[in-house]
Image 1: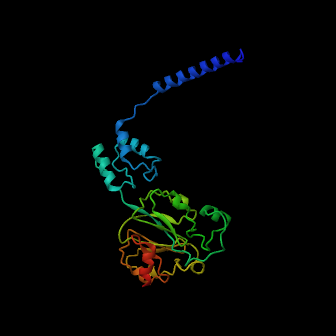
Image 2: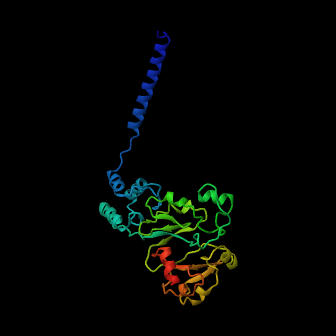
Image 3: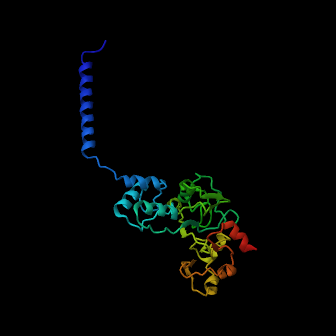
Length: 279
């Protein structure tokens, strides 16, 4: 049997709920802001991955700012030139053409070339491995090789092969989501351009220490610096660095590099470049 006090309690709660509902309804109508239909159109045109490569946390916010400012310099690296043209046609402006960029792993220390400190049996996560000690590999600057960055790539552009992350540059959109996932900072962005050379090493140890830890490291021997007629290579903190604005892709640095893996073509797969230089 229902208690006599139960009915008034239910009625009281019901009235409170009704009152709150009416308040919420009033507030939603009073402060409702109509969204510009152009924002919806642009948002539907954008990739929708919310990667943040454009500098905004979401595609929706990018669309809002673009509609408000009509800033033609705003670019979406993921969408590329085709998307820039679509956005420009929709807004009636000429959008800047985004420069295609790709992630590059500045390391070639795979399981065959990099020496291990010890067998790692912990959590298969790069950050976890580097928190306990330098990581499975002797080189503290290397690709840890556990593949934590792969989960951050929404485009299937990363794979783990023989203890080293390989980037599929045809799939990479340059969204930069993988960069904060790497504890050693071995992943960087480079312009996706044919005949682009990079130093595929991240070690700032002295030459002897680098050579002891890995057969594929830059030992700062300066041979590439001396052979470069364009002064496009410098040594900074025991690591060779290519000044891209000066580099003419002559290939002389590859010929004299004693480790045969330091200077690589950006457009080539690391393994293909390695085989080519070894031949």
